Length: 267
Ligand SMILES: NC(=O)c1ccc[n+]([C@@H]2O[C@H](COP(=O)([O-])OP(=O)(O)OC[C@H]3O[C@@H](n4cnc5c(N)ncnc54)[C@H](OP(=O)(O)O)[C@@H]3O)[C@@H](O)[C@H]2O)c1
Image 1 (cartoon, rainbow, N blue to C red):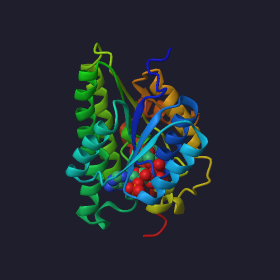
Image 2: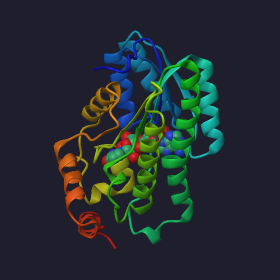
Image 3: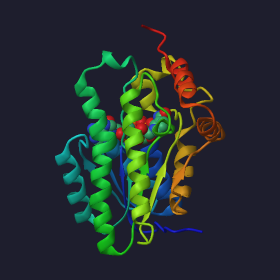
Image 4: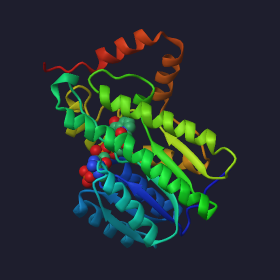
């Protein structure tokens, strides 16, 4: 049963300039007839997406150029979005990883990952939750990851940030169980997006590998689960199986296997 109906309603999507966020935007416009506020830093990519979506669908698209790793960026997006229209949904999708031996990267990189993957998600969730309470309706979807359930060597800060985001979303959902506001999380495994190529993960697991799902397929699953108000949804048989093993095998084994899978080929 659907708990959300996006038709002619405004939905904010962060990280819509590429990958999963872009496909979520396309899906919401085409199949749900939602009006969209798409946010990211690369404005040209957002402009192209706006043009494409408005040409193909009878929906409105507004762009917010913003750096969400900065606290003022988060405030800017909230203020801008709530001035555009009455917001019905927010999808915290923007995310960043670093792949490699943890000590090799600068602390700045990790601060950026924590600021984007957790602090911005936490702050936007709370700002919009307050807003939804006032409006008496709304839905929040936080995109986490299978890495929210498994410590991932060579992506240690990324997986820590996703653990934090998952735990926060689960707890927030429980606190708001009886409020009528939908709070969901969606935890994909590998997706064939820029995240894989930009981080260099493709040197270990090719972007076209069967382990990486197609972003349009993942987007469809994300929105279907969000509409049903699912607490946590995991797309794909392999990812579900992985998390089944995580529940039954000792944590030490899981981390060791994860380390073997992700160990970089270049030292
Ligand atoms: N790809 C995977 O294997 C995978 C697996 C599990 C979970 N996920 C999660 O899925 C979500 C989407 O990732 P993706 O795979 O679609 O990656 P992607 O193609 O690299 O997209 C990331 C998006 O985040 C935006 N972004 C990055 N830094 C930002 C910043 N400082 N401020 C605002 N926006 C920023 C990017 O836009 P700009 O660069 O234009 O700002 C881009 O639109 C992320 O939360 C990721 O953790 C991905």
